[in-house]
Image 1 (cartoon, rainbow, N blue to C red):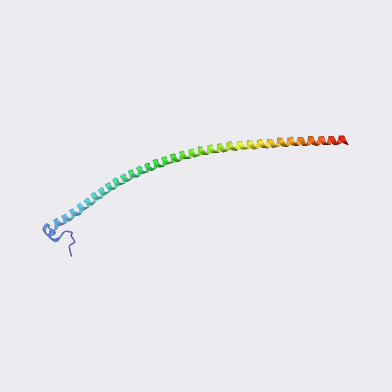
Image 2 (cartoon, one colour; image 1 turned 60 degrees about the vertical axis):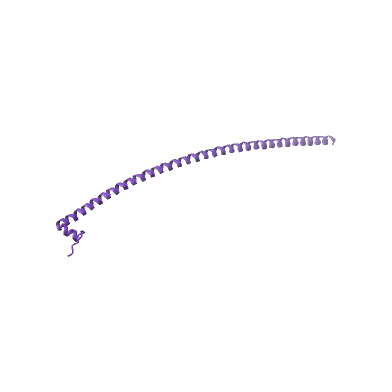
Length: 137
């Protein structure tokens, strides 16, 4: 059977079988320790990177919230200004409409007065004509 030791034959021959086996065990144990150390370092670095990204994301989130709040305030001011302007225009139009309605009411009143005057003149003339005709006959 072939020996499957990771050490070359010359090293095994120089160290001997018990020493070469101890060396192989020490290497494997050392590599496992090294792997565990690298793994721990990697996890520590990964945790630090994760914390850094979390801080940056929180900072960006705060920045966006500030910008959105500023834009919201700006739009609220613009909407309030437009609302005030619209209210002024509606009030102006309401005043103009009221003035026009009063003018129409005045003209209708004048027309009624003229009709009543002419109607009175017509009936007085008609009654006078009837009286004159009645007196002649």
